[in-house]
Amino acid sequence: MDADIQPATPGATHATMQAPAQPVLHDVLLQLASVVGEKNCIREVEQLRTYESDGLASFRATPGVVVLPASTEEVAQVVRIAQRANLPIVARGAGTGLSGGALPIPGCVLIGLSRMKKILEVDLDNGFLRVQPGVINLDVSKHIGPGGYYYAPDPSSQSVCTIGGNVAENSGGAHCLKYGFTVNHVLGLTVVLGDGSIVKLGGPVLDEPGYDLTGVVVGSEGMLGIVTEVVLRALRKPEATRTFFATFPSTTEAGNAVSAIIASGIVPAAIEMMDKLAIVAAKAATGVDWPDVNAALLMDVDGPLAECEHTSAIASRLCSEAGALEVRVPRDAYQRDLMWKGRKSAFAAVGRISRNYLVQDGVIPRSEIAKVLREIAELAAKTGLRVANVFHAGDGNLHPLVLYDARVPGEEKKAEEFAGDILRICLRYGGSITGEHGVGADKAIYMGEMFSEGDLETMGKLRCAFDPEARFNPGKVFPTPRLCGDKPGPHKPHASELSGDAVRV
Image (cartoon, rainbow, N blue to C red; front, side, top):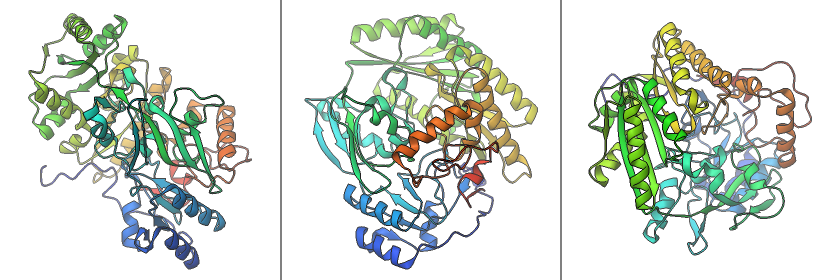
């Protein structure tokens, strides 16, 4: 990394501003420490600052106390204490989220789940395992890999993100096109509710009777309860995987290739697109031997060997017909892993070419990729800002990274407005404001543009059924700071208003 380039943390050069919160009472701190142990009850201001933001880093707020429980019962006791003291509660995993979903509420009880990292049960005969929420995503596959199994959801941060965070955000990853998101791989949950009661939803079977409450909790962004155990599906490793890397003159040809591959009936395990800026960044960070081109696709097909050989040959031909400059096939597993390292390192790698950047996460119909990327490029030309595009092309989940320099007056605000305009483009094409990063504090302002007031009110009623006091993760997702029973008003505040004293920095 160049000496004068800092890691890409949007707004990191600005001072944090927030009004002071009411301190947590001493007797409450003593009660919390009696549950989790003195060393697992963090109160010093300097230590609390470690928890001020998540991976987005655009909002910051200081919690009143951080507690680190080690079991479901300890989480339940902490929740009961917070409830009696009328304190808000925010759950936190590894803090890798990119939407401000783990942003503390000033003065809240922040429950860190990092100590809950045990794999509790493995039953490969029945295809499941039971884990605590602090287990690292990649460690699940490492644990069951020797038995010929793996865990399918693979977000780019899988080497550091946790299963609990994946459940909160319904994370996807490169291979979600064929295998689905986290919700497709969670069979059951143990959840602590707002009154401290413990419920078990679902279990180690594919379809239990009754309402799909497991599916309701997955993706609820920590607003319905705290997940303390997760039953995951374990999948058999495919017999074979075939990978290729195709380069193109522009994102238009690459987008057309994606449409042609999917239209042919092929369901790739993954198909990822990168534009020129993303390629330049990945090369600088990982040393991958990629040419300087305007667009590239990285694709996996997996399954029975004969099927892989057949479908990869068809997909390669379709890329050539769409205008590919080159189609590369890795020589061995090492070269394949290096290709995927280049893709999965792309977000962090952009820090090599820009002091700051904002990550967006919109969804569009994949047939509209070329049109939408052209519109984004036109916006970039108007604003004078650069955009690096790296995304899950197969399901149209865009990840445009808006590059800027926070030292330049007004440039951060311009980047934020640009990022918002990208989401509006996605909505105009019939898409969504998020595919896997969640709404959190960052995108709450756009929920009113995607959903009607009736839609939002219905979501609020569901939340109130789980958490009548709206104690868990308040101020996130919904575009108005409504409590249970409140009628939504016409004002749609900026996300900085939603968490009380926390503001964008």
